[in-house]
Amino acid sequence: MNFRLARVWIAAAMLFARVEAADAHIIAARLGDFYTGALHPLTDLQDLILWAAMGVLAGSLGAAKGRWLVLVFPLGLLAGLVLGRVFGVVSAGPAADAGMILVLGLLLAAAARVPATLLCAIAFGLALMRGAANAGDLGPETDRLLFAAGLACAGYAAITLTMALTLTFRRLDGGPAVAWRGIAIRAVGGWIAAIGLMMMGFALAT
Amino acid sequence: MRYWRVTLLVLAALILPRQLDAHEATLGVLEFREVRPGAFVGRWTMEPSIGAARVDLRVPPHCFLRLPEMNCGEKGLVGPITITNLGADMSAVLIKVIPIGGEPRSYTISSANPVVSLLGTSDPTLQTWVELARTYVNYGIDHILLGADHLLFVLGLIWIVGGGWRLVKTITAFTVGHSASLAAAAFGLIGVPERPLNACIALSIVFVGVEIVKQQRGEAGLTARYPWAVAFTFGLVHGIGFASALAGLGLERRLLPAALLFFNVGVEIGQLAFVLLVLALIWAHRRLDAVLPRWGDALPAYAIGSVSMFWFFGRLLRVLAAT
Image 1 (cartoon, chains in turn brown, green):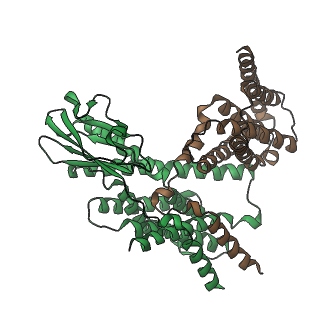
Image 2 (cartoon, chains in turn brown, blue):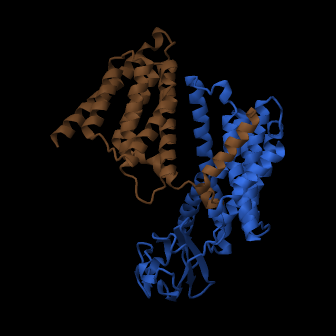
Image 3 (cartoon, chains in turn purple, green):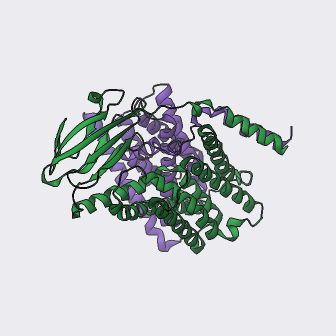
């Protein structure tokens, strides 16, 4: 079987496999729950802080390390969503989220040189946690596929843009004239760690 | 080989039986007749199959509804009417408003469109215009952002044209095209059946997908050479599609130009937001040097082409099923 024939077979198999989504009306092309999934993280402060902190940390480490997160982060969110829905794994709780914020903040404040593999592991673990947490709020009538697509797209866009913005601001090749920018990012890390510490205290107190 | 491909794709499309099920519409008709300014008598002239009592009808906050009476006071029947529990058992509700003086109007609430904004029964006031703008700008934004087919077409154009002035010209041509045909269709100057039109919209995205592949092979396709001409032409097709979203809302003819303008403004806002997001992501990818490996160059084009071909076959079957 040559390569072209294989492509045709794969295309045909995909068409057969997606019978359910074959509704042809214009409404079927509408996304509905896609935006519910994409906007859902905005309703949770943990998501906002953690995603931003992860993006800033990865961006501050440079493009070579950060770029892997373009794939790893949304895949982690999807995996977390599946774990949450299929296996009933729920959110790790506010203390774990606060702990994660604290760790990310400390890594940023210390300007730690995190290796790419560890960075990917942290990002995947974080995305897994937040994906499961977002799955917990899925309604019974929500289209899970569209919700998952929306969440993954939001994760991809948020992490990619945050990393690129941080990288542009940081200007690793800028020399001593822009050294203050590195300090500014470390200061942001300090604030994030402080937020994590406060949230941790609050979570343990209640 | 080519015949094999066509046969396989046709077979694949034919095996989609779910979309051929005739879906019987479960429609209800609710009539509000104005008996004195701001006061209405409402009754179901066609009761929905789930029973009138189970319909979760929400009227504007200043209106007091206890069927058969509805009192909206001096402000009149202005604002949103919502039915929250539309679904498989009740697909749509037609709301007829019969004012004391003036023409009766009809509004359709469906599961895809569960809110309609009523614009009063008297002459338009400032509040009418504000309500009209709020409703139709939002409706335009919703329509473009929820229409995956329109967005995919715009994405394909961006992919081919890249950034800069060429993109500005191309998107402007698309805007001019769809605005012109939207206006023509809304005023009844042209009319195209919705189902074949939807198939054509899907086909326009297939065309863009093919053009991307051509460009990646080093061939200068029509879109690469004359992007604005292609964008304008297909803009005309997509504009008629936008017009179908305005159909059936029961708008008075005197309010139609303004509604059309606000709807178009909404479409442009949504389209601009999408284009800016895509451009920002392209910039971010370049900044991070996160690009697809060489073997994956063609993936986006094939993804766009496959999804749109999938829609095309589905929509074509709808056309064939209806004839």
